[in-house]
Image (cartoon, rainbow, N blue to C red; front, side, top):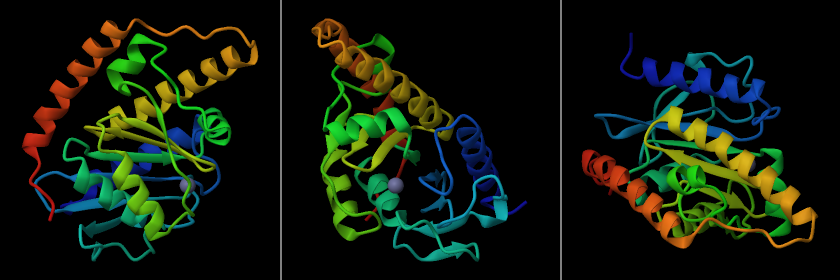
Length: 226
Ligand SMILES: [Zn+2]
């Protein structure tokens, strides 16, 4: 087994599960994982069918974006993933999808307020909309890096898709599912034209402080990326 094999296998398994569940479509989206104990991360290759993907297709790079392993071209959003790990030391896994309900809110420019307890506990205070920038550009990378510093674990990218984080890949995958459930419920509620109620503010704040407490543990475990 090579140094990165476990991470590569986990990324492929997660990508295929998310594809079967309909969160990833065709070759859209990308996944990555910080490699514990090394200054590197693993990311899905560019423009490649998730259901055909095998661990050898996964690319491993350092934070200077030099390829350490893998013969395929890394995802066009690789620099965005690296920037997230740099500004969010608590994050060890990033999943970017074009999931439908969150993408609909991306078109409406509608952030999701705190609607459910589990949303505040896992996704953060609210799901904010990150302004639009074209895919695969430095502009997108910089915009994302600026907007994810508020310690939420899910964001909607305007006219694009969704971004979910976790202290591990399993948590990031669950956050994708929680985000889609919240997006769907919020959209249905908005369709009624009736007032959408939120959870009480103190409950949201208690949940968020619990999330921050967990995040700090992971922040301390990761070395700073220069
Ligand atoms: Zn995308």
